[in-house]
Length: 507
Image (cartoon, rainbow, N blue to C red; front, side, top):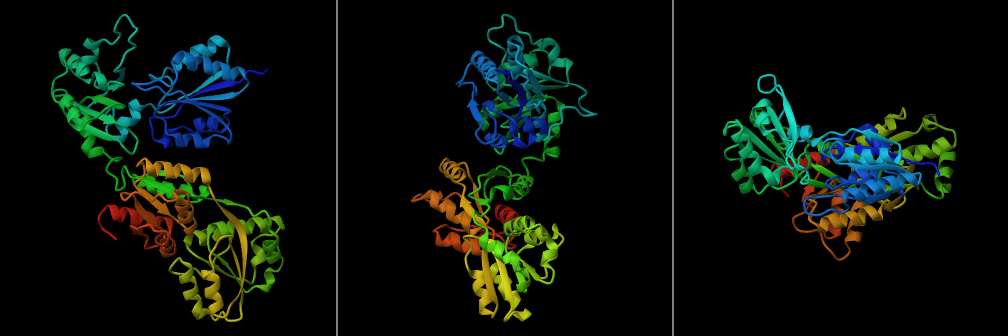
């Protein structure tokens, strides 16, 4: 059997966005992922369906698997001919025991590659607003273990030289030994007034920083109840934190926001939330699938010339319609002569990407807003095509009919509950891991409420709806709507959440 290959991949310090592109590429090709404690498991979503995931994490209090067994596991899986990703926090070769694993693989003749990662020694201080070097304050830095191998017979840290020989000191895994670290530094020449910062859960939503000096940092850490995992930074550069902090002073910092949006659409909402400091949890309540039977949609495409208007109510509708148009070897020219309506700027942008400009886009991005705007367009007797979700309500169709329009409403795509994602969402909600739940459509409300069953959202969780139609569905389902977007768009929803937490708007 052909021997596989092992990739020792650094996942970064916590923020899943800090993994390298090469690391993501390795995950996308993995047969087996062997991953550590403290990793954001959202990274595992970049792996193929059916990948074997094995947790081998180690913490101070417990080990899922001893290092010698991890080494053997890597060799065994590779010898089964599999592509193995050993996903490690930070960088594999910076206090990550990646060197030991590589030695074992080399000894066994197993091919391997090292994919460097962003080490917490650099990233965590940066996220706290602390540059490790600075032209005026520090020309050197050292990364030091705060917890040496207890089996070593001799302490290899030269405290006498470290004490005064390097400008900035970064200690990893040193929280339990903080008093000893402080006393050794002072005993070896560091002034008691030297600035110090201790950063817990760096680059994560729970990041917390305590600043002080060598003389008082131990007491301050006790007072603020910091515990591992934490990074300790010693040196004048830590005094820059209040001026340079950027990560933990953003308007939504630390808020965990559940993004209940179709899987392929979640990234836009997540990106905007991240920019505001929130931690988006992408667990879409719905997924979009092609129809098994396109007979009705195909029939509508064959007789496009019989319609006066075509109305798109979502990006999904645009995508699904043009997929079928392509299947007929047609393009946007097939819509020549038709008036085109679009609800919302995202839908209009999806049309523009295909070379089409909507003739009508209502100022209020709802079905009601669309129908209201059509009143002045003399649509009585006009034929309308509405390619929509298979579970869409009849608000738009009924509204156009009330104005005398003749409507052909046809399913263009299938909306289904993403059961695995919804169950995970319910689990996180139950564990108190979610601060805000976003609803971007009525179907996301329906699917999440169905999964909750008789349980209710805990009273402390804030609910945010993209528009009145979604909010109405939420209220009918027994939910309290705390936030309603003024503009029925993804940016509008994020702005409303920000305003809520800024105290500018309260229900």
